[in-house]
Length: 291
Image 1 (cartoon, rainbow, N blue to C red):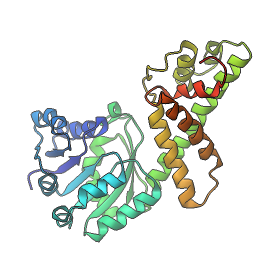
Image 2: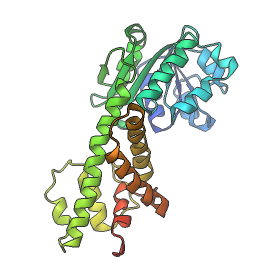
Image 3: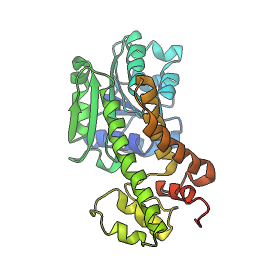
Image 4: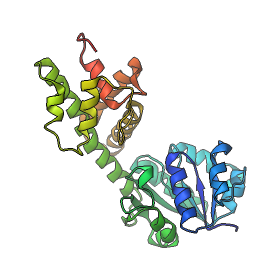
């Protein structure tokens, strides 16, 4: 084996993970469907095979950071790839639900791989710093095997025990709280507009680091096309709400709140505002009012 760890998926977060491991002196193999994303990391010393099977065979551990669990299963599910899983450790840091985490554990274990599921609760810029926060669940032996690499990635690394769905559950709980702030703030801005109160006066009441500050500023200034630092597009928010809604359905718990927020986000998305700051939801809430 040529490297300590393989990182599969080189979006903004996956690239940050790979770069941090390289900087920490780990021997890293990288893989991405778009080869051009591998080149900067190869220039830093990473191994960059063009074939995923080669990338998997290169390391005893694989960190997966791609769009969703279905894509992960498609990636690993080729016959030539599944035969390489026996004895390897897989850490999935994609976004999903507790049900998907449990299904993935069963799937990977079925091919003889150890499996950890994790959630990244920070921005790419926080990876490798004291502000980095990663939650991990799975069998303790698998965690100990991957601990060295994972500790390089987050100053705040939290092992949650064998409950494989715990990281995604906490991720969705955190997002649920955030969506409450986001949509509550959007309605608050709409309320101010309806009473002739400047939305800037609402912003002035908020703590400086409150998530609602950039949202209400965007509404006040009409700068919906400029996604704020630490903010998210409506497309991203809609995807998060879909996962929260799905978890409620999977678990058989009340889904009225995520159903409502998802419906509002979807309306704005269908209206063409998906690439804008989530605050753009107010455009459909204004109804006949000028947007």
